[in-house]
Length: 302
Image 1 (spheres, one colour):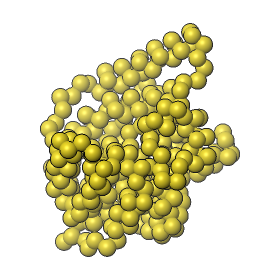
Image 2 (tube, one colour):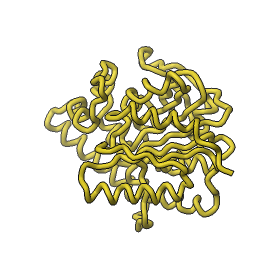
Image 3 (tube, helix red, strand yellow):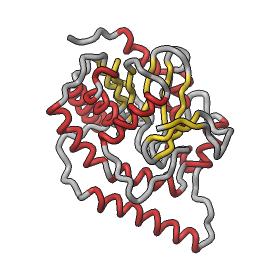
Image 4 (cartoon, helix red, strand yellow):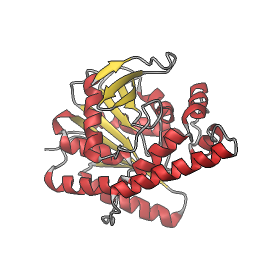
């Protein structure tokens, strides 16, 4: 593991840290207690800019692009994401940035698996846990072999590349699609978000990373269920944040499901954001930042 600057593009924000076989794009901003912010499935660092802008006044916020996302190295055919592999990557990034005190880990959507597993695996390095509209599976999935699912992702992107190349499409849709998927923050989209979404979002390396990580979800969830039986959650402040839908039937189910998740985590707090969409890190950054700040006022459990 070693750290370098961005020699490919010196104007790139952040720095680069090599962990294992991947060079990862890392941003370390703000001052205060350390906080590791993990993005959702299919999210890049710039999706978190609105939230980080609110948090960095009182937290030292570390975030990184997982392999294949953002400006991190693309993934190869032998890359099979695993839950514990990502937990070790989280620890390695913190080590590379010299963070040796316990951190608050915050995970959006699928990244809730990563932050929960980190807390169970490294309780001594965990100061708090915040789950933002996390992914909680009530029943175990029937697992299709991971290698088959990952192989399908590579075949799909390979076929799409061949077709677009044949018809002369050099660049796949990016900003226009991203702006439909990710809601704008209250202040509107920044120039850096526009620039980097055009450069990254929807391009073949990104799509491949998204499909491969999604393919690994069932396997990672199975690992987490096993970890829950062997490694208890630490008694640190824990909050589950719920994006409560505008649709009454779905809203009641989703809130019930997230309360079940809170019970599994031993969360002392559940925060419901009414009429919020899943991408609350961009749509409701002020509310989310305020909830995260509230971790400091929650007492540690015995």
